[in-house]
Image (cartoon, rainbow, N blue to C red; front, side, top):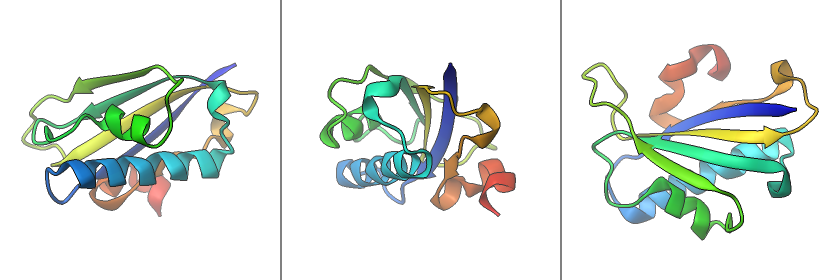
Length: 119
């Protein structure tokens, strides 16, 4: 079965090191929460808001060692009601874990996106 694992985080500043650190924190948290083995990951989709351009979030995953996983990055629309400096991720995970047991993770300023999951 293919399951979607969602998460998001924010950065304080549009800086490469901070982007990489935030991506590492988010991916590490999702892997730990769900006991994900990278061999079971089909692909990962990242999106970021237009105010993040110092580094590709997917490059942060590569720096973390996600070298064999297909990664894709895209740009969020510039919505005035959106969360600034936000990085989102969708992990496509091959697992028998039922979707309702998958744990999603929203960190820092991104907690407002899914308050039902962060309380």
